[in-house]
Image (tube, rainbow, N blue to C red; front, side):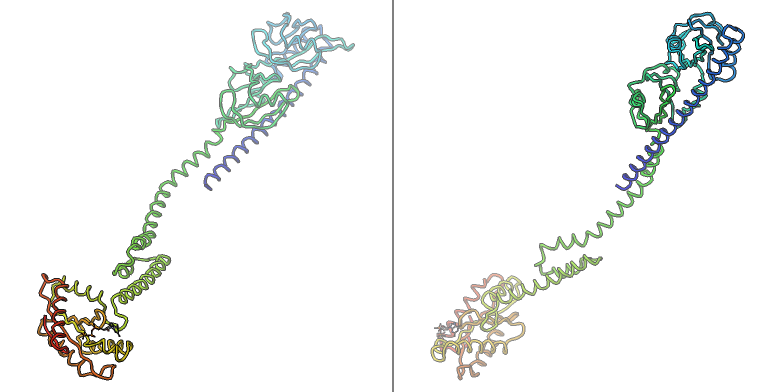
Length: 490
Ligand SMILES: Nc1nc2c(ncn2[C@@H]2O[C@H](COP(=O)(O)OP(=O)(O)OP(=O)(O)O)[C@@H](O)[C@H]2O)c(=O)[nH]1
């Protein structure tokens, strides 16, 4: 953007400078031309004075026209014209004796004043501008005029005066008369052309001077300065095509862009490469978001490379959140499978463990314990003591079990002991030891209580958990039925 803005600024500056240069140049040339006309009129006034003194003197007149053409390059032709329009003397011999009827001649004879004519077609169809001065004798009688013709389509004083103004940089110069007709142009063929449709010429015809950007009659975008020559009401236009003015700047801009492209591509590639590295940890973290409850989420989070400060903070924040989530989930899960009264695994936990062990196919055994006459305990000592007794039983189980055993309260006053890797005999032994221990330990009632136990070992994949528990239950029922405080196998 700043590159574009700078380009536009420089472009505007360049055009502004060119307009101002052309304006100043046109004004300077207008001054020079004005000076030329004043000097030329003085020169003709001097001749008129000489001729007034000897108007009938042919050698004097011949000498004067010779002097006017030879002394300087001002005129292509010089002539002395009598009041009736007959040429008395001329540097162009063929004119002598001719009666002039051209517009310029008629104008000079009619006005009887110093004049610069409009361009007109003279003898031999030459496009001519006539500068003339009246000749009056000592009694102020009008004798005729002395004049100098400038042949617009031949090499003339304007070429010397205005110099070679068609430069290689595309600058050019042209002059229009008071009617908007070209009287000087680099292309001689255009001299005499009516160019009043040109907006700059229109401004000159309104007696304005200045500078403006325009599209000329040939459709060329131009930066033109223009100024008037008061003596002749001519307008001088100095101009340069806008395209030529801006060409160097445009070339510079394009070469800058061309040179900058490899660097820009390199920068873009670097940016893409960098953004990939910046985005990678964020993308990894975002991909993990839906699976934050997975058991391995903390380890996977730890592996995400948070190589910059913000990503690392995000990762640490997520890690903290995930750890808390997992702790919470763990607690909830634990509570979900724990019996609140005894702290042992509840029925749900028991079933989950049994299913999992059964699927693994490893050997194990179960022992179902039921407090004997627990209703009596409640009835006799109250429900709170009953609860204390249940907690007491849980303690006894904990103290007599192995670390690998799973201790459950499956409901009411019923407990289950899961013995991984144990066969029937081993399970019966463990159950009996527990049964004996309870029977000889004082319970919260102040007396020992007893339990009945049914034991069964898992018979492999084919046996369902329900079938296994049913066998153990039946054994328990047998123990109750045959007197309680005993262990039976199912
Ligand atoms: N204190 C207390 N009592 C419970 C709880 N759950 C079940 N009970 C009681 O346990 C008793 C079980 O009684 P029964 O099923 O008749 O069995 P029992 O009296 O132990 O007799 P047997 O099992 O035949 O020896 C009922 O009185 C229940 O109210 C509990 O969480 N706390």
